[in-house]
Amino acid sequence: MAFSDSFKKFFQSVVQTAPDSYLGVDIGTSSVKLVELGKEKGRAKLLTFGEAGTYYALERLTDISSLKSHQITDSSLIQLLQDLIKATQAKSRSAVFSLPLGSSFSTTIEFPNMTTAEIERAIEYEARQYIPLPMSEIKLSWNIISDLNETAEAQKQKKEGEVKKIEVMLVAVPLEIIERYKNVALNTGLQIVGMELESFSVIRSVLGNDKMNALIIDIGAHVSNIEFVERGFSRINHNIDVGGSDLTRVIAQSLNIPLVRAEELKKSFGLIAQGGEKEVSNLMFPIVDMIVLEAQKIIDSMTRKYKDKKVDRVILVGGASILPGLSDYMASRLNVMTNVANPFSRIVYPPEIDSAIRETGPSYSVAAGLALSKLVG
Image (cartoon, rainbow, N blue to C red; front, side, top):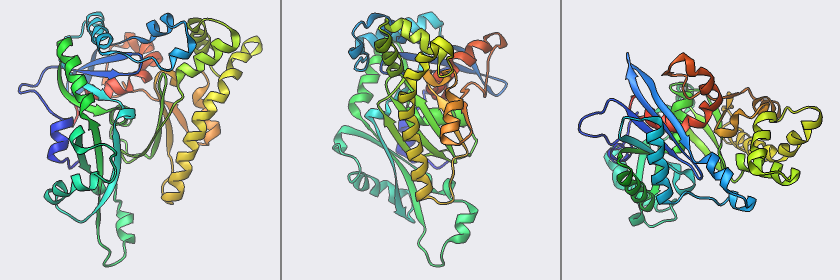
């Protein structure tokens, strides 16, 4: 993979002496997840993991309308991280932080056949056409991806004399976010050794070196991210303001019950409730269908734009991905094989925690991918 120098410095910065383990810190809108990974016989090894925030957010929020807008303040984030490190007994202080998709920007742009040095000189000028913020307020990174996306078949079909084009992935992150996380890390006793967009981390943890064309649907608490991944690279990435909290909210409002009880019913019955409980499932279908509709739009868009590309598999990640019956429902609606991700499938962990991994693993896709970024090539 050919990374530019700026890309390496930003996303793959390392400490002078490599530590024995790394923390992946996934900062969500109402919770923080942590995964610590080391190495054992050349493979990543799970040392500890945990989450803080979600349960308490649900328990303390009595106003349902505030569930959507709840944000973690810096002081709360520092406290959550300190509590989480203590609770998980994490040893490493070298951390890779997630960068929120909603506050960052990424796209692919095309250049004529140019050297890396020429792209380096041209990238900022080109970026101004795509990024709505002043260059002084962002950290700009880029990565050449065309060589990895060009198949032998595509090369054969090129017309004689056609100018070769180079495809570049462009990433822009507001400096305000970077400085915020540096401050949080400093006050938590952590050293940031890397930052990465959430979607990059998910691709690494759930796909690894698999080059299939996949549609990854990450259902978070408040936002779902739908991403088409071709041969390891994001091609289309779209957020929708619908998540697991909306499922909880509609159950609580419709049945006039507390949020905590609604959360329990959601997890217990999912989309497969029968008899008297079927109302719980029926309440959730319209919201799930909103995610399905957006996913279908992306599939249709890729089919129109790239006639030779199809989705090989739909992969569900995020806390709500393990909702009973969700993967089967998605498969039937999208007509594509669908499964729930296991971000720990390439990681060694004790067999006695296998049930916990199956139950909560998908929600750690970002955190696991962040920590893996320092342990894999």
